[in-house]
Image 1 (cartoon, rainbow, N blue to C red):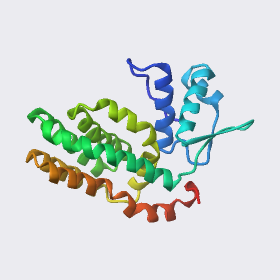
Image 2 (image 1 turned 30 degrees about the vertical axis):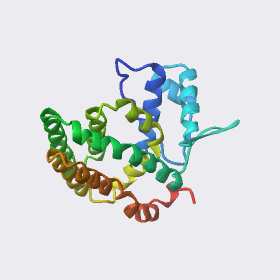
Image 3 (image 1 turned 180 degrees about the horizontal axis):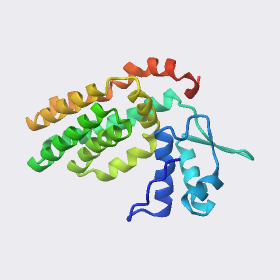
Image 4 (image 1 turned 60 degrees about the horizontal axis):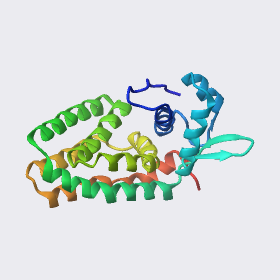
Length: 225
């Protein structure tokens, strides 16, 4: 597991939840592998209580399975859950994107431009971890601009299914295309064209289904059949 430092504003529960979730998304905890509460607790220098609580919460989203007398299993990727999490994200982010287009200030646009410069940099470096970090930051910024930050955190727990799929997608798809799609969204926002901004966002989010078959063929051991 990769152990990142606890943020100053995080509760212990939120910290443990974030660390486990991030390791599932970046495939450090691979689909089908077991999670040891004791080992995670030791790695984080915590008792098993917050680890148990975080895993119980993750089990509600079906990203992990609690197996009686055996432990906790990282679930295989279920494309039905990937599609459902993508559906939830698309429904909420479509509305958020329109609001962000309407509300974006000059400073907001400049901040998004800076994000895209870094996104392109890590794309060229093929640093997928940092690329996804800035990809996520671009979308999170939309929630902030729209003044819907709580919606972002609501979406994230279920979105773990989609994010894990996106990690695999990084290794087979043209990440440069993702940069181009972000640029298209931003250019539409600059024009204050809400209809075009929404269209470009939806084109971006709909790309997932195009790569699904290829990803499942390359990594069949990670998927539920």
